[in-house]
Length: 126
Image (tube, rainbow, N blue to C red):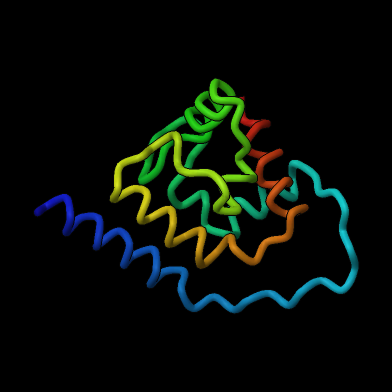
């Protein structure tokens, strides 16, 4: 019961703190490739850093843990972010619900180039 209440509180906090952000207007120019720095900016601005830090598990696993497990499974972070791959790092239903809520609200409108930039940034974390 306490775990369920804690998860609901975390989801509420994330939704309240980030829910009213204005959507960015689509970019008029086509960008084919973004840099690691672009990925880091997106990772931060899309609230990924709220739950994921390079070395420390916060709400979600650390970036290093994500990289390790995705590497061992030859899996694509971009595929996960697009919703094409089930969670393989933290499969706890409460954690999955939090991540799904974030993917549905903050990540779903990103372009392939933006998603690849986030992946580049994450993979750059050693």
